[in-house]
Amino acid sequence: MSGRRIFLDVGGYVGHSVLAGLDPIFAFDRVYSFEPVRALADRIAQIADPRLHVVVACLSKGHGAVQLFNPGSLAGSVFPDAPEYGGAAPPQTVDKLDAGAFLAAFTGPDDRIWMKLNCEGSEIDVLESILDGGLSGRLSGVLVDFDALKIPSQRHRVAPMVARLDAAGVPYLTPEQCQYGMVTNYGGVRNWLLMAGARLPGAGRAAASLAYNAAMMRRPDVNGYHKMRILKAAPILAPLARSRRDAPGDGREP
Image (cartoon, rainbow, N blue to C red):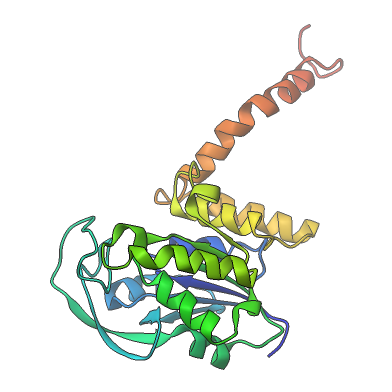
């Protein structure tokens, strides 16, 4: 069980982060998506890939049951004072798993793990559990959205956690550093994985990634990222197109 490449999607929602992680250019051996709302977890499970394992639970600190407020919305949180976003809904009782215990049980010391945290305040509990368990060395990259800053009861925990991450040498990026401007969550997570060194070399893998992203362009929920990349590439490609058009012997009039 050593030497694997693993992607942990903490806060799966509808699976856009999973789709980014399944890009062949990253060649993950396992992709775990943690989503406590059954309807959303079932939606993620419709993504057909044998590497994908959907866990119907929160990743947190400690095992047990917990109340999830505004379940199914973009702001679903275990903290009652978290702000609403995308509509309110009655609380649900959901399962939670201890992050450190999960890593200890399902990953090995030689595995390389990239972890995305977008879980409306629970990111602090997840990171505390991993750091307290001495398992942070398994993390090759973390994308952490410090949603706790938006939650009055939790915002005081952010600065100490940043200090702990820095002291432990955990490589992490925030959305401001890698997701802004990427249009969709798919694009933001893919860009983070590229910046976090998850890309593997190889012409065959690059070709497979190109084909995969061409297929993703048929999905209106994620293709804003691809349209943005095409628009950005247009000024670069235009001179090449003109030079090919004006080349002698191409059958065109001068």
